[in-house]
Length: 96
Image (cartoon, rainbow, N blue to C red):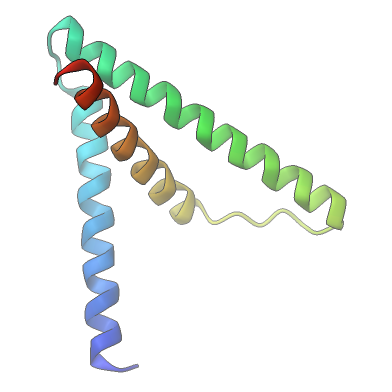
């Protein structure tokens, strides 16, 4: 594998690790009511997006008569990305 590809994949892995840490810290950090509402709304949106994606995946696999193969690493990273985007949106919307 070329060195450039290894460096790129390492950078992507570090970015995903940072997003996961941000997600966990923002969920565990106590704060005032406004910050709790922002984290609650971002968490709710992330849960809705992940459940919706899983439902679509189940329907697609059922229609195509394929086995259900889902990678938990990919699901975790997608959840972290969706949560980060929702968190930034609600912080901007509610003045955080």
